[in-house]
Amino acid sequence: MTLWFVFALMTAGAAFAVLWPLGRSGSRRTSGGSETTVYRDQLAEVGRDAAAGLIGEAEAAAARVEIGRRLLEAADAERHQPPDSKLWLRRAVAVVALAGIPLLAFATYLPLGSPQLPDFPLAARIQTADASQSLDSLVARVESHLEKNPADGRGWTVLAPVLAKLGRFDGAARAYRNVITYEGETAPRRADLGAAIAGAANGIVTAEAKKEFERALALDPQEAKARFFLGMAAQQDGRGADAVKIWKALLVDAPADAEWRVTVQEALAQLGDGAPRPTEEAVAAASDMNESDRSAMIHTMVDRLAARLKQDGNDVEGWLRLARAYMVLNQPEKSRAVRDDARRALGQNEAGLRQLNEGFKALGIDG
Image (cartoon, rainbow, N blue to C red):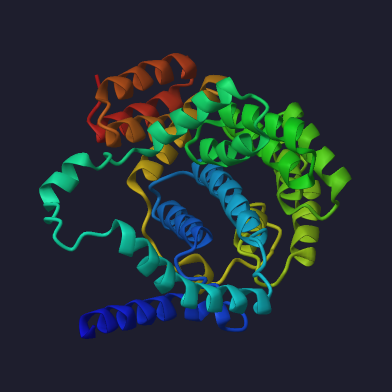
């Protein structure tokens, strides 16, 4: 009986340790290590790269736009976390569980248990365990389920933000449309749809995306993500004064602890309106960036620069930055293709060609 008493005491102690927090008044949510902190770190990284001349202002601005979109999504998700349950209910659950779990375990063991049963070796248990699945495989399973159950609004709600984080913006836009269809229209959902459409257009706020942001504001004039992207639309249309007005108003209405304030302040600073830049503490909270995210961001910036140079080939510094970027990405054949395209674009611009050839020579791709 002594052994059983010890086992019961250990079980009660373990249950008490696990269930004790349920009986405490109020729960505290930690802020360290949140997803928004990671995106603030990424903003700091882009700022340092731009200051060091590793990337141009256009690429830095594009990177800040993409990080800002993710930061707004993360801050919105954290803001809409469900509230804690009532204290009396949590305490009641703790008391019932504390008393009931040991009794239930004992009552179950009496008819089914067998102390003489041999041990189950660890190797055998490992062999029978399911292999861990990658995020891509889990997403594929959800997509397969939704193909068979297209009206599962909760499934689309889970899938949409994951696709957006993976950079699959076309799929994310489709998922958000289905969320609105089956779960109802809200301002955050319309804003998320607009952000996905803009992401699919490489950060350009298209007319379709703009319409979604306007619908979001019609539902909630204070929807932060929609207001931020409408400011981006104004900036991309060459209406800098309108963008400044939108973003300043957004800062006025923003909570003092809003994580995305840094993004808006950076956007204003890039327009040169004299708005104060974020503090060093806010921008340089940490500096780690996921390698896959870094690679995806670099490729996105390079693609945007290449697309811009096809429209305006007179930017000598832009051609050199593009060639240098391909060298960094270990794609020398693309650097040589950039050299040939740049020379054709500049045509009879002798001064530009001279500067271009000197730059290519310094990069080691002259010829």
